[in-house]
Image 1 (cartoon, rainbow, N blue to C red):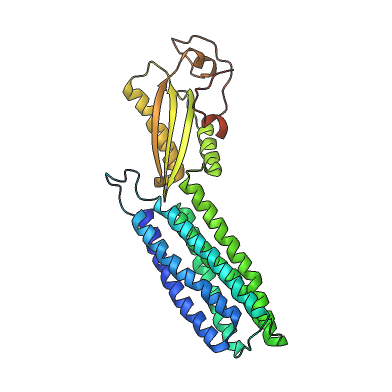
Image 2: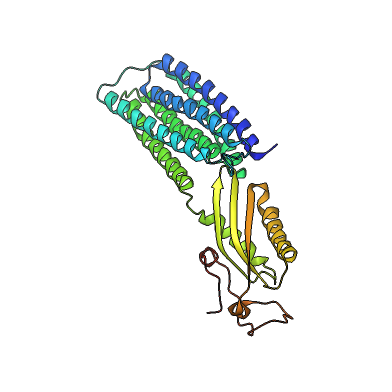
Length: 328
């Protein structure tokens, strides 16, 4: 089963969980008449909506490449995450509005003991499913699944705060605490939505993943072969669960096509062995020039024009540059 398909199947679990927990929170609100529980239920409507959006995006993302989409359909995950982040932020603002309105005119609550038990159960389930979604999303490089998981976890954090507030309200009978707790944790929801929107926009704009680039460069630097005189113009673009990597590899100019391709195969195997099937590698080979001799470690070269001086250590900065390196 492909990673895209795994992501899609797990998102089904997220959607079903969201629907069940939303119904449970509505029941808790019906029993208690608590505005804090109502706002928690309102936030869950976003869980359900965004869950279906995420499910659809992962369905599209899992489709194979075609002539109209040669790089696949993975970009839809960034759009899905942006919509979900926007919905989360809007839900937080709505909660702030409702809590602030009720703060000046608190409504009486009832049967808080039942409400607390129901909401506690939803918090536990939310967190477990959310943590599993984030883990699976990170394993499979799926921003949509990570967004769904973080959404469930943020729902859990706000729910925990609401539970604490309800317990205090249950013990003290201070009515305004109901709205105050909802107001505080709505801010956390808004912030979570903002972070998801920010990450999705980075993906849509093909912003470089510095952490991933760092890991890639460290791997290549530690395993560079004598025939790999230089590596430059390295680019990584993320499409859903697939990373497309392209670069220019400088090899001895006298290599024939088959010999140069063998070096590309070695480079591809190194990357795939360490990053798995989620990497698609495209390598352009350049023949070395006279100035390359000073950074070339290859021994016994019959056409060397200059003595070896030193090796240019590959870094995220210089390996991403589009110019060939030299000893200067």
